[in-house]
Amino acid sequence: MKHATSRRSVRLSEEIMRELGNLLAEEVQDPRLELITVSGVRLNADISVAEVFVTYSAELHPREDVDKALEKAKGFLRTRLGKRLKLRKVPELRFRFDEFLETMVYEHPE
Image (cartoon, rainbow, N blue to C red; front, side, top):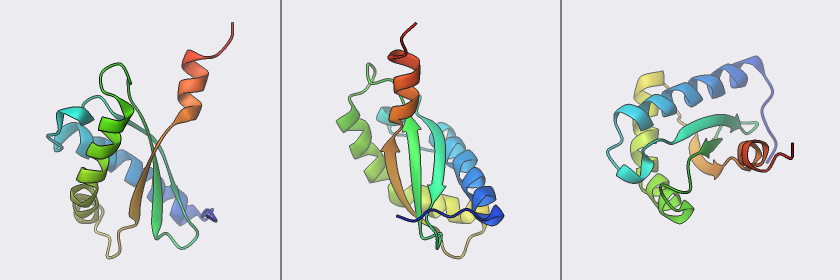
């Protein structure tokens, strides 16, 4: 997937990241999605797909459960995102666990 690098796409990805974080904290009722952090958003070249990187404690909820809950909430999040950001075309959301942060925090040798 070719990634967008324009100023508009960078600004939009930051807005998407902020709003998704707010939506997950304030409006999503699924207990499996408590304490999830959106750590980044990367848009493809035509801004039709947003790769959303998330982090969470695997001790609280298994990764499979969180993945299922995110998949179930995807439509709701996309609809609310479009309304909040006033977008005509909202990018498809693809959630990915942020391996980088987990590696840096938990497996970093000292």
